[in-house]
Amino acid sequence: MKGRVTTKAFVKWILFLCVFCFAIGTLFSNRLWDSSAEPNGQQLLSQRRHEQVLQVINDDSTTNKNLSHNNDAMDEVLKTHEAIQSLDKSVAMLQVQLAASRSSQEMSLDSSAAVSTLSRDGSAKQKVFMVIGINTAFSSRKRRDSIRETWMPQGKKLMQLEREKGIIVRFMIGQSATSNSILDRAIDSEDAQHKDFLRLEHVEGYHELSAKTKNFFSTAVAKWDAEFYVKVDDDVHVNLGMLASTLARHRSKPRVYIGCMKSGPVLSQRNAKYHEPEYWKFGVEGNNYFRHATGQIYAISKELATYISINQPILHKYANEDVSLGAWFIGLEVELIDDRNMCCGTPPDCEWKALAGNMCIASFDWSCSGICKSVEKIKFVHEKCGEGDESVWSDLF
Image (cartoon, rainbow, N blue to C red; front, side, top):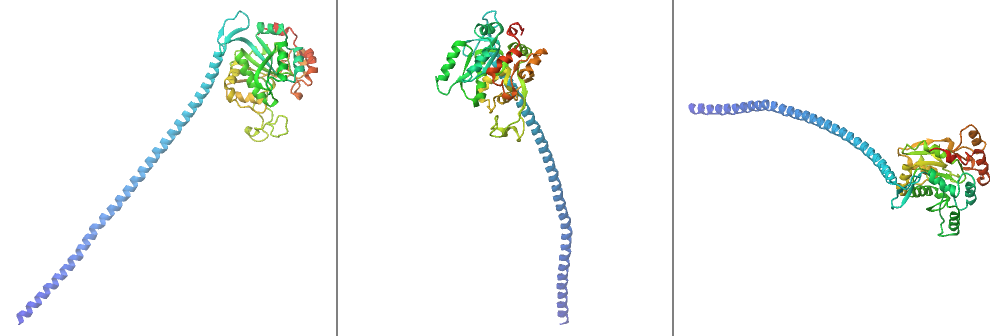
């Protein structure tokens, strides 16, 4: 019995020791697992931080590359834009020069000043020094007669002026709104008598002066190959010799615009005489126009007249003809020549200048935008300020 009791107690102790050892082993294993897992977690965290640093570095590198690429692209865009502007300018100048070259192909006529060239339709046209277009209206017969009696040669003298001096002088006028009206027939009759008109494909109207100006230059360029083209109003006194000698001093310049340059206010008031409907295009209210020649008289060289002829359909017309002409030349390489002798006042102003040896090219009254009551007064102006009938024949130009 004692042996059995002892054996049972022994078995219990063995079981107890086994359970105790199992518990101790389990506890020891968990600690070893935790201690081995802890370094692995730190490594994982460290690895993630390293990856984030690399990502930031990579992002910064990409950003810098993009910024560099964008800057290079902007530089290329600016260079391309400048190149396009330069090409546009060169092409425009080449077009003008090409047209002028075509219009100046000479063919021999004789040894006189009138040498012919070929126009686009193949017909011969004279090569002359200058073409003067006197702007007139159907109702201005008396004004035309007063000019014929003063500074404009007539009959054989007019033809001689063309042959020997290469100076063309014509009254320019369009058509009436009604075809073959009594107004048109009156001009036809007057032209048959004096042979001093240039008829334009244009419907007359005071508010169409800009269109008429374009038409004049286009018609004149097609008919005559001139070095200069001049527009003058029919209530202005002109000394032809002084005009010719003045223009001759600029004949070596390819693109010149000559006249009395001004920059008057842009009038936005509807009741103003020279109201500008498109005043808003010139900036804030109260601004002035760009520099342009006053409309009573101005001259342009052949290349500029040819430019107008070529681009006539797309040249914008402002309300005032002189502003329109100035606008057409903005953006071109044009030399503006401000000659105050082209806008002298009537006596005593032009008379005093003549006595001082400074003969005027043109005289008129600023207050009337021409000679006030020109039909009655132009003879007096001619007597006091005229250069003499023989001046244009003796001047060398």
